[in-house]
Image: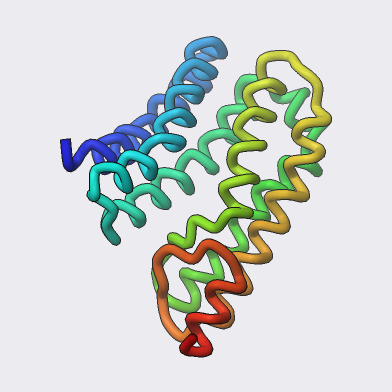
Length: 186
């Protein structure tokens, strides 16, 4: 039971090739169903880790790696399944991708590893965008993505700023203010 959060993160990571295969072989309903399961596992793995006293650096890194992998699989799978939709909303998808890619790349350049901050702004952006993407790919309105894209950019800017000011790689950082205080030694 103690390893359940890490197992959920590993399963989410394992969903990525399956999601891509489902998209490649034109299985939109299966893609959306598995994506929903992956999103739900992301929503509960951290909560479970804290409740079970199983939070760890390994767990945070595994969770972040699975998150980044899903962030790659969703737009790629979306492009294969709904190319006209993704082309129509390309600017918004590009903003979302940039919101996750830029801070990840900065962390890789600065610390030679991905960040695992799990900031409140990133949690908000992920929650919003999870709903937005599921709704959009299921045939719903695009305005949820239009609101979520700037949230992703703001969360990405906060994470990039944390990486920029941090003296070394850090784990959980709920906000730029918390990172600033940690850096200042308070």
